[in-house]
Length: 292
Image (cartoon, rainbow, N blue to C red; front, top):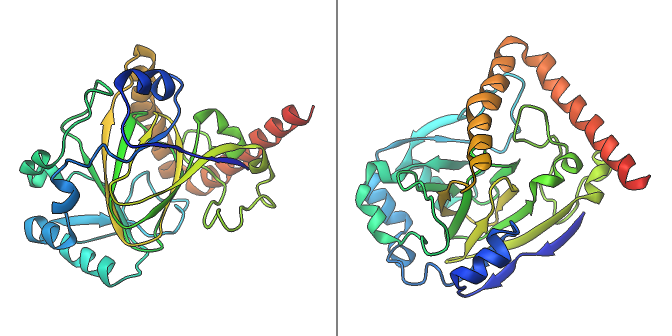
């Protein structure tokens, strides 16, 4: 795989951001975006436990989804405070994603500032928290609503691998899903190009997110995230400004996800293996085009 580092800046003007990153759909790390946010120092494990510790949350382990696993189906449910205790004592390979903490504690939105000066169309009802124990993994996927993401890391470090959506065939995208059939666990040490040979032709970006870093991830970008330490981050989502982008996101949510779940219910074993068969066939065709 051909991998380059994600650009880093402390701050950036709206014009430079739009012309150099937003319009070319190129990721960026902005280290100073969250510098003035109260959340940067205020949000700690103990603070979250004190304000929303009794809330029950869905947790996800590191296992890849089985034949009968529906999209976004949690592996277990636990009190948030108990989960945070596990993360702090760690390592624990459990994570939480798409947790709308702000529905439970609305005043938390006063602890950060929406970066409206960079992008319009933020979904201001849906800031989302992502929490993981050391060693937990968010396997390679892209977000089904195709939103642009501003992902700010608070506690802990997280290794990130990003690929533009046009790399889908090389990373074994399964049909009717936003998931890759390839295995990217510990990719930085050894990428599995033996079982997934098309990976060698893919082009990606990488970085390690640390406290205060904000990752701009354009809509549709594939991402694989590994928690190097127990930590948490917040994602702010903005809809694509084009009509085509909005319609594509709607199709993904209402059509693609529903069809995938329906086939999982109707013929789980057949669909499980068929998706991987098609992913391999498409990857082989993509390699032949490169080598022709």
